[in-house]
Image (tube, rainbow, N blue to C red; front, side, top):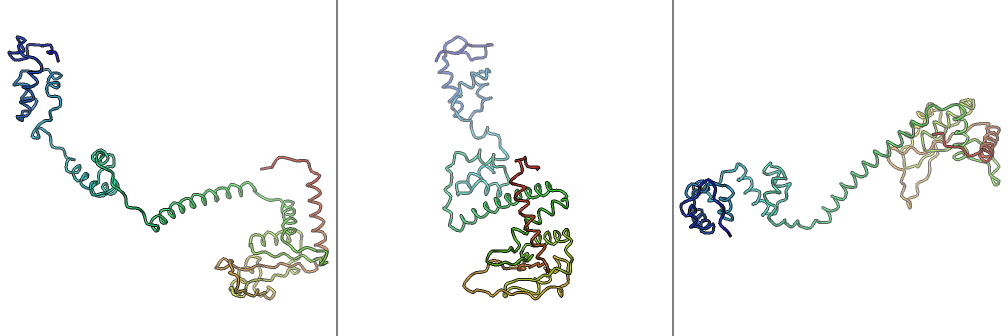
Length: 303
């Protein structure tokens, strides 16, 4: 390496007259460094006041311990390294020391990553369950938002809309006259309280007199029949004593019944007395709807 250029006459006698090379000066600087002198002391001893040249002279030589400034985090760093060597995770170290994960990462990144013990089947199952429960909560929120938005699209129903809905409701859920059973009766059976309420509202729209309506509960014999009777009486707005005798379904021990629990109230049968003429009109209305749909031109959805 060639001798660096002198500046401001700062170098000692040998360098002033060119009798000392940079390599020789570096040997002196390193020797002083290894004796424990600081940069300032070496600078003053060798009269080298140019920081760039002083850096080159001391390149690769660590500073003496006594010159290092104490750091408030040195203790935390040492503890973090010790804990990492014991196999602790960043989260565990953070909890113990109260410092940031970024600092922990900086302090221990040169250490080997601890091996995590394999999870047991039970632990893996719990982790999977937590993830699935979070997914189900998110999906349930999305479902409820969609349902609420759809409900808002309906708005207030007109009498004609209720009339048409009622015809379709009866023809899908009500009893119908068959070739093998020529009975023109208006009987509706359902376990959904909202369906029953809509159907009863439709009958009121048709001006069917309340005294022509019969209500009867159908429920499994193993369920709470008395509770079901009070439930359905409240749904249709009558007294329990106004209900017909409850029909009990026999329990088959070979089959596991799924409709159990407090939410199970069986079914309600709603029959219109002297309903032959009404049945014929319902059947006619339904055919009218079918013909109307077949003859109507395709239109855009109103929603």
